[in-house]
Image (cartoon, rainbow, N blue to C red; front, side, top):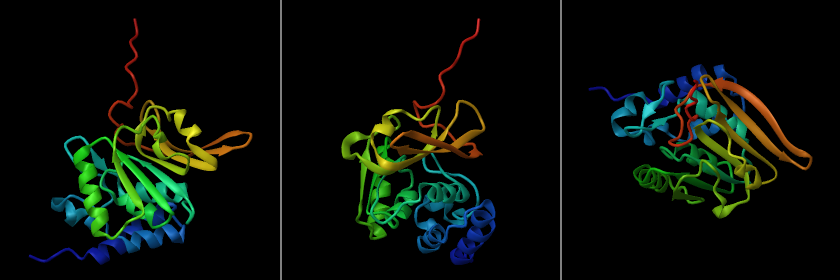
Length: 219
């Protein structure tokens, strides 16, 4: 049986999915070319690692589609001196890409099995400027704050206000927020005169456990 041509698939992903959806930052494109996405998906899905679709990580968790990952990376705009917090480690792929852009990454996930797999993949990739921890960070993660950037890599009904106290001055948070579909990807920047909020694009993704909208009863 012929093996997939991952290099060709990666090039097609960048051209047809990433650039065509407005990701023009050459730094982001370079990261996508540098890190093989097929090393971070579950083995049985390696053949479709570069398809523009969400892939299962566990019974209840999905890996973001490549085009969404790229837009989130572009929005975070990590720099070489940044300490970044990733909420929702998942496969470890976004953590790897951010670690190549920033000084240090703290990555947190509530799923112990996903955390262990992500640690293994990051070690195999030779990435050392990360810590991967287990816990629920959907309402903030003060352990190593302040952060220069925060990526909430999954949907929440509302961005927790605790995050804003954990950002450095000038820091930015990027996350997927909304009480119904489609949700919005937002970027909130901490400024001296308050927080500046931007709505970047609409998308649809599964909510983190416990971060979904509460049912509203009508009588």
